[in-house]
Image 1 (cartoon, helix red, strand yellow):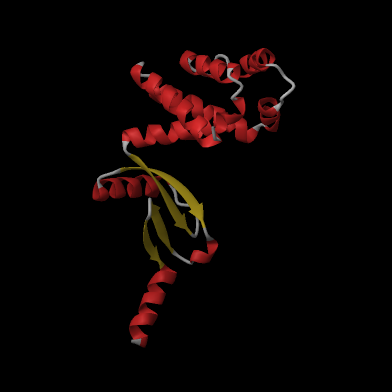
Image 2 (tube, rainbow, N blue to C red):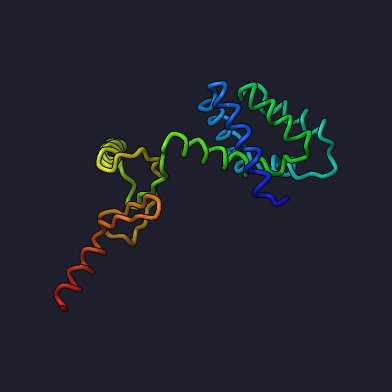
Amino acid sequence: MNEGKISVRYAKALFTLAKEKNLHKQVRKDMEYLLELIEGVPEFNILMDDPVLKPLKKMKILNSIIKGHIQEVTYSFIELVVKNNRLHYLDSIARIYLDLFKKDLGIKPATLITSVPIDEELRHTLLRIIEKRLNIKIELEEKTDPGLIGGFILKIGNQQFDASIAYQLETIKKELSS
């Protein structure tokens, strides 16, 4: 069985259970916490991938790290993952869970590219306008590109709204040359 199928099955099972118990929002926070651990603590990855450590020993170490920081349902799930020797899939499982959560709530990922970071008030206004006009909920990721000069580029799914100065100048150039 390939890695993707394993991660999807575990993530779907956790999401279904969390939704049934009305804990899917709390489990989302748990998955975000676990991803932060996986991405931010190199030793955590060593623990997950160590073939010498027995599952019981891994669970004891994990217990000291995560117990009290996550929901009981998430903790039980991690125990199952460790017992089934699937701990090295945890990052993939967490990402897929977060995708399932967003899909269930109708949240679409969006990327805003600007030449400089925007302030909180502008971000809030922009989110409100986009969500109202497109009738969707979005989760905004911000990126900066100093080469943009000015304006912004907004990507939602496979759509791109280019309101950058460079794009406007290119449009004017094409109009003048034709």
